[in-house]
Image (cartoon, rainbow, N blue to C red; front, side, top):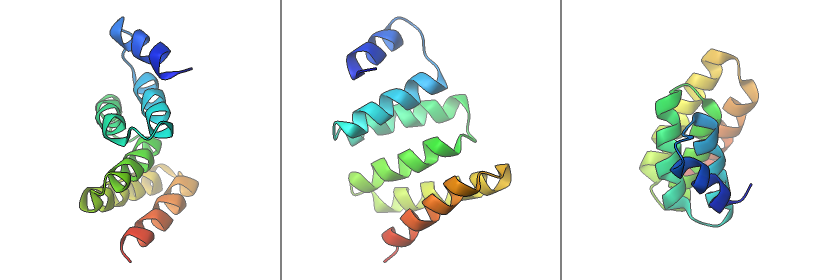
Length: 102
């Protein structure tokens, strides 16, 4: 779906974790990282342990040169992913974290 369709769904009261996450993904593809951050933070209000949202949020923070927030987000996301057994997400965020810490 495109950003307009997702935004229309949101405007019509269909707010959800998946909708916010999908909207953030679409916004990041359009280089709208600041807007994506807002939606990812709202997505995490639905499920604070959704590791994919932390991975995307860390990326968005890094793209907006908010490296301290990106590092904190990746660290939290890694912890959550490991506790849930989401090994792949934890590995990916660890790689992104190491790149930021260089």
